Length: 109
Image (cartoon, rainbow, N blue to C red; front, side, top):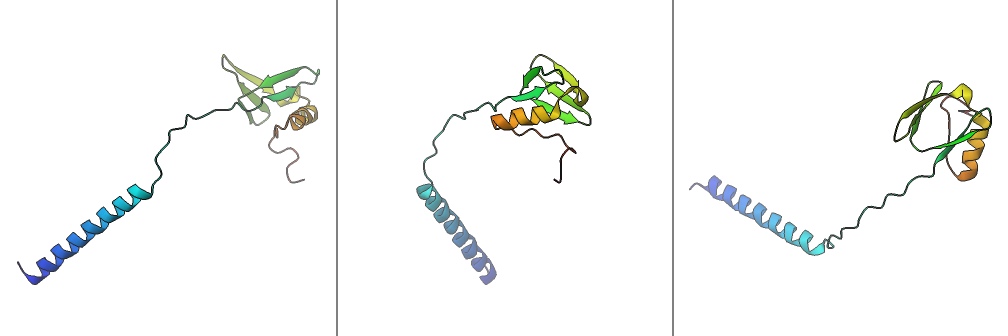
């Protein structure tokens, strides 16, 4: 075995010892993993107020263009924004601590 091969083998042996030492260090210093069940807390419902003052609570929605899409568990509902009293909807949600914003309206103020 040549001198270069001996040096290469010694280097590999040193790397293996360092890796083993690092693994032992991390195994000792890592706290034991504790499995905590994830708790999902439902976000408060968003209230939409229609122009006729009727109210509806929704959970999962998107506003695309001039339409609010309500993704209810049993069905999807398409609600034109023109049917909503937007200032009343924003106020109702602000009072409940829910952030309700319509893209493009009141931005930059």
